[in-house]
Image 1 (tube, rainbow, N blue to C red):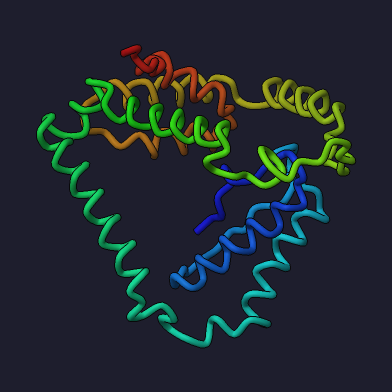
Image 2: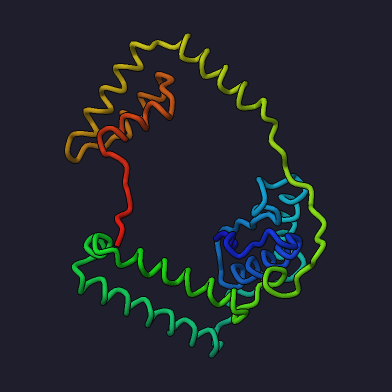
Length: 230
């Protein structure tokens, strides 16, 4: 389980600590077997060490201070939770029936059905936020006019230059004949029917073929997916 990154806000980012804690608690109460808690600053940059530690401490506080893990199913028998579960199941089956009527998921995608549903849901959500029918604290209500910035993680731009130099040295020192052979084998596997490409990809990796070179072959064989307009 991962907390909802889409719920985090760039405005008043410390509020995200509360959002993540509530979501993490919900996951634990639901019996999750693994949990990733988002950092408070992920809407702005990669997490700082401080933000990542707070995310970790959130899990540790829930695990060791709240005692919620002492009960196997704390919501057992809850009428409200059962109602939510039934409503969700009903909604899922309605979608399954619509997909079956269209000829299955592939046919539905070709018709643009799931794309339209996702776009429409996003549009309706945004309208609700803009009309204040849905309150996002710090975004459309309880706003701070002069909000102080927080410290974010800044990446040293020289890292890219060093990586490029390492890549150039790799291409000069590796066995490029072997690289070409492994890429040719990958192309044959990609163009064949019902062939597992993973062994060919691993051979490419062992020859120090780059990820970009591997993807270039697959892109050349399969092309690039472009979502149709409906």
